[in-house]
Amino acid sequence: MQDHFAGHQVHLQTARLQLRPFREADFEIAEAYYRDSEFLNAMEGEPPADPPTADSLTRVGRIMAEQGFLFAIVEKASGRTIGEVCLQWMNLDRAKIPDEKVMRMPIGIWDKSLWGRGYGREVVCCLMEYAFEVLEIDRLRPIDVSVNNARSVALWRACGLRIAGESSDRKLDFEITRSEYVRQRPIHPNQNP
Image (cartoon, rainbow, N blue to C red; front, side):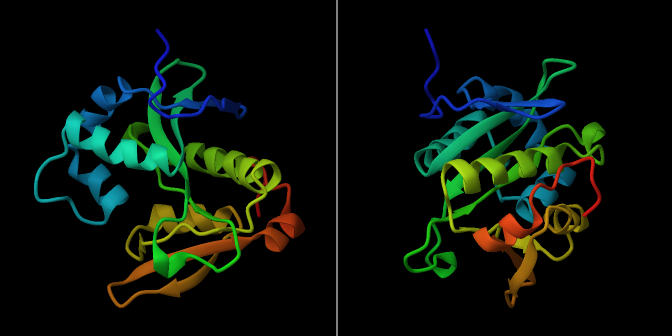
């Protein structure tokens, strides 16, 4: 029986990765990574009070899947599921733009041994292309990125996004509009911006 947890059947790929609909069984894999404080700091900015469980991750994942396209990130060479990403319709009022189709993109490469290899950039570039060219969005707005999360800040900048604002609690909002995307496209992970 096919797992329809993600609510979509979009399959995308890059040179080294496959993006497939997230499956409920993927939360069992994710749970161990979400118990790692360094990973949690990168994803959340600060660890939650209670350690995440497969059940709590599933509840959050269900909301994300209802609001967009929840993908598992699979490394082609090994066949391992190594992370998650959601191309999510903007769900926060403060980041919505009237009369615009706005999305956000929470992303996490679970396995820290794979950090720094450009996988995040491959995923973001692939999903930016899908979002702007297939879904025809007007704006991508990754929000609430901790100013102390150097990897995330570098990722969004490397993909051509700019800082659109900073909150009083030192969180950055990044964005790229359709016209900015069109001017810079194509940015591929093997190119320097």
